[in-house]
Structures are given as structure tokens and as C-alpha cells.
Image (tube, rainbow, N blue to C red; front, side, top):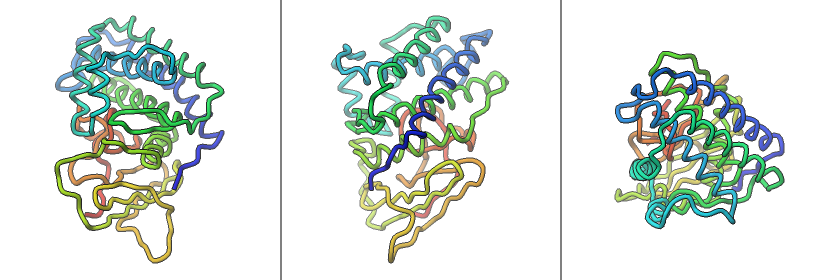
Length: 289
């Protein structure tokens, strides 16, 4: 099964890319103390730097002629990253780029967002781009991933500092539809590699939401694939439904389900979550095992 990306979905993620970036910039620009802790390890400034560096990496990613942002060591770490080692990459990148001035970071973030939108205006949204762990993600999925980063780290900062922050469920659903389904239907690379022996049992989870296309995610012998919601002679082990907000936890490996191991606390159920790097929510639900 190959996911399709409609013109309407492409326009939605481009709009969310710009709007969420502006909302995040407004939030962090008003923070009185950039050294205030957001997680056990990251300050506000660290968190903004993390998001800003992802945006800068994506600017380089969509421009084949651009000089790689990371050196050979960094690029090597990107290629071998799995969901269990993404924190190593986060630490490496933050160490190589020490800028923590919020004003400088926000200016760079907004400039990179506009550059990506400019460069990709006439590009096919299904164009595959190389991502972490030698995976392949469609262009629209890459944009959806940064939207997710902005949403959940905005939530982190707002929660820590008791500031208002909302996550529109329709925008949150872009991560599931365009990024998660996108990478699973292209090439997952090494992202889910583990030393654990694969389970023989086939596990299928059907997802239904007012904001996402219905799909079935299947875990079998260590591989996660995407299937149509109905097929002869098969049934789902679990059906996850959400009427007003996407409430999705894809079947990966037993244990914590997350997009970023940097912070494993439970987050807003409005954020579509997956056991993939690099953004944040803990599990909102469960699956058959």
C-alpha cells in the first residue's frame, strides 16, 4: 500500500508549517527566563535550539545543492540512528551548535521555515527524502514532522511555564497521515532496528479518526506495514477510534511509545504519536500484544 497525498493535504501542511512556526516564535519570544527548565535536561533555550536546528537541517535537506549542515561524524550518526539512539543524535547536534540566544534562534527558525516553503512550492509532495536511520520520508511528511516538533515542544514550554498553548487536532493529525504512514509506506530504514528477537505473531491495529484517513498498522516479524482498513479473512486485534481528536498509537515494540525519548511524560492526546524520533508525546492508548 502506498499513501497518497492530496493537493488539499499538501496545502494544509504548508499552512501549518508557517502558522505553527509563527505561534511557537511568539510563545518563546515572550519567555522571561530562557534558562528556565522545560524538561529534566533541557532549558527553554535548549528546547528552542533543538527545534531551530531541525528546521535548519530540513532547509538543507530540501536543497540538494546545499552544503551539509553536519560534518562526517554527524552524518554518520544520522544514518545509523534508531528510535533508541535518537537522544545521542540530539546531544551531538546541540553540542555542535551552541547558540542559545532566543532572538537569534527564532530569527533563524522563521527564515528556515520560509526558505523550505519557497524551495518546495512546485515540488511533488510525495518526493522521497533521506531521513534518520536511512529511512525515506515523503516531502510532505518532513514538513509534518517539524509541525509536530513545534507543537509538542511548544506544549512543553507552555506547560513548564504555565502559559497557554493549544494544539489544533487537525494539524496534529498531519504527523500521523503524512509522516508516520509516509515513512512506513516508503522505507523505514534502520529506525526500528533492535537487538530483541522479532515476534512471530501478527498484530494488527486499525485506526479511525475524524482527522485522519482510516488505516491498519501491522507488526509482523519485526516489520511494521500499512494496510487497507478491511481485507478478506483478516481482522484487527484492536481498533483505536477518536471522534474529535486523533488518538493514535501505532504498534511498534512493547514498551514506551514516543516520538522523542528526551521527555517521556504523557502529553496532550491531541498530538498523534508514534515510536519514532524526534518530538515527544508518551503513549495515549494501547495495542494488542
